[in-house]
Image (cartoon, rainbow, N blue to C red; front, side, top):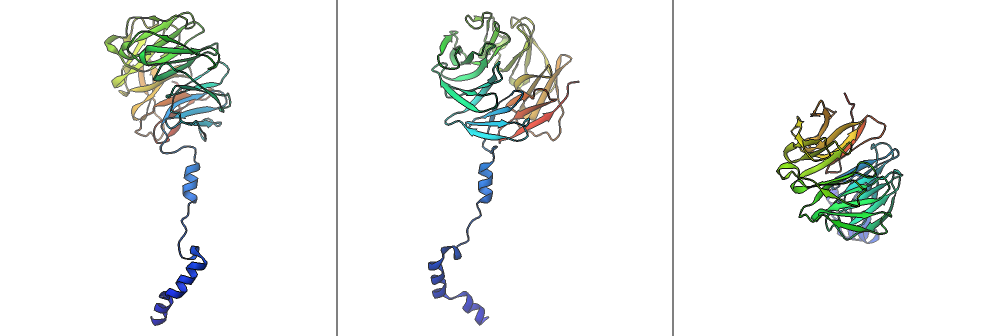
Amino acid sequence: MHHLADGLLRPGLLAAACTLSLAACQAQPDLSAVRAQAERPLQRYHVIQTLNANQQVVIAGTQAGSMLVSTDAGHSWQRTSVDGASLIDSAQCPDGSFVALDFYRRVVSISVDGAVAASSAFEEPSVPLAIACDPRGGWWVAGTHAGIAHSPDRGRTWSHLDLDEDAQITALQFVDEDHAIAVGEFGLIAVSADGGKRWDRLEPIPNEFYPYAALFASRDEGWVSGIAGQILHTTDGGRSWERQANNTHAPLYRLFMHEGVPHGIGAGGTVARLAQGAWQAVPYPDPLPVFFGAGVSLPGQSALVAGSPGGLVRVIGIRAN
């Protein structure tokens, strides 16, 4: 024990060793795991707010301003930072490129292969919430004060239309070159029959309906989803609405077509499909009780991609019955 104590308690030799090599006296932390985590494209702080897809890539926009791109149908991702942005919505343009909406009044242009090409700032609406790309390639942004902004030249110039309503537009869609629909809080609905030059307000959706999402299959038929799992259906272009059964009982935050059938994703990891006049839950392996805030159909595949907070992106294989 005496020799062991001598070997451990020799301050002179210890000080000399520390002078010659600090590394010999201090354990060096292994940062490889930290670096590996930082390099991962999907991070726990990512909140997936929008998803879109063409024949080549899937794109995902996050609250923290990251643009995620997958070239293998959502199985792996690469990350590009969009400085100072919070990407809340996106749309595909006729040539297969995308536009993503930055909450801080910018439109981010994304090429067909998913590369961030440029961004364009606009002044109004002051709080943008929805974006669309019309069949001519024009960009449209809608948001607070029932404002709709339009750029016919990929963001070089902008015009702004105020619908004179104290309401925010939450969804905007062009169904063909001439016909477009905008919906918003307090049941606001406005339609255009001339490519967006003029917008006419219809009678509001009953009971001051607040639409989380809207989907129109044509100028006449469409759906809006709202609070407490409500889903309304129109067959006359929004002039009248009827409630449809939502057997999932979950709010649906995004509506989209998949294999020609309306689908939605929402609270509690819900995936829903319209079948025989009612919205039914779509079963899938290993469901998680998270809310899906973004979703998109994968072109040419019997699968969709859903995204949520926590950096979660799921590829879900489903088939229409």
